[in-house]
Image 1 (cartoon, rainbow, N blue to C red):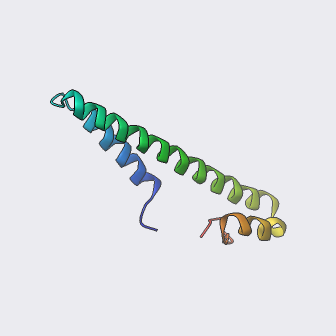
Image 2 (cartoon, rainbow, N blue to C red):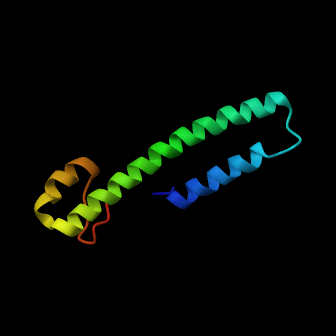
Length: 85
């Protein structure tokens, strides 16, 4: 996988920098605001997905392998260490 949550953080800060550019015209601010809203919506979805994956891995770690087949159907194979592949 190429993208990591740290990359998402970089994208969010890059958008913040674009929005704080004092040289932007009103039209450019509106365009960047729209782009920012789209980035935030996608970021929220990515973060919710990562949280769900973490909760599933924690569930396996805390309750053993008996739920592994059900979780694998939802999030994909879960390794012994609890990391989703």
